[in-house]
Length: 326
Figure 1 (cartoon, rainbow, N blue to C red):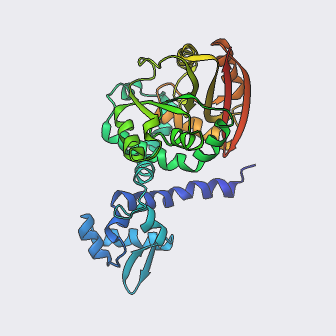
Figure 2: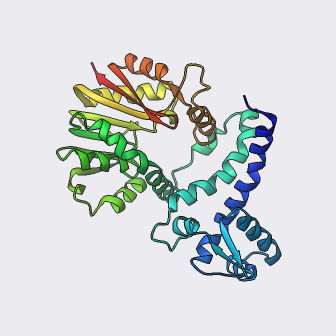
Figure 3: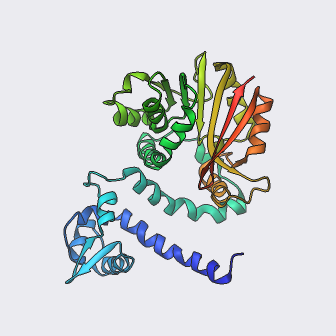
């Protein structure tokens, strides 16, 4: 059970989170690069107030994000490596995604009180946002991609449709394992631009087809062997997912596979921990989304012409659900 001490300590960590977000907002790690600078020098380059910047830098040094020696600050090694925009290992998407949480999570109390503001989801997709978000998805998917590809390629992937593919990280891992597979990446044009940047010079690029479009309106094609639906289920409500499942079924060959990867919770929706918290994330970032249990998802799939379900735990609250077209 959560103790009072854990409760208060968790809330107090908001202070640390805000300090780190401020470091990203003012691009402190990019300003410092691999140099040592005074607070005044950092303030001038970031166009901030010297005294206030010094307090922020002191807090970052206390958290070991910076080093402090002889009146000057420098980045800790991993902060430079991953969060300095001139580093060859810079995680552009991760930096963007973590900073964006600064505003989004502040809205949680209002959303719970008054409900979601659906008007904010009516705007056109912003290509600049999509570019950064897609890079973040690549950086986040990398550790899981090989494991997922190993499971998928136990059977030949064949004509492999990656719906909402983003950067194509999972498709790339599948194509590396299955030399006969052909991948179709369907997503917004801005996301596919990132996929081209990441994979365009690879040996498997000739087996990747980019299909700009929309999951609901763009044709998927016919005679597909495998459809991959990764981290999309939670964006939509049950009826929207059923609509997409029917569309997938029509595109698959008889006996073709549908592979879902997502956070799946237990029947009472309180476990696993990661899935329960991710359900709150969906309140902030989607118009109708939620997390689903395996049972709920299998029921939707049964209603739309799928059977022979197989569940696979991927760890950290994530799971895979494999289904076959009847």
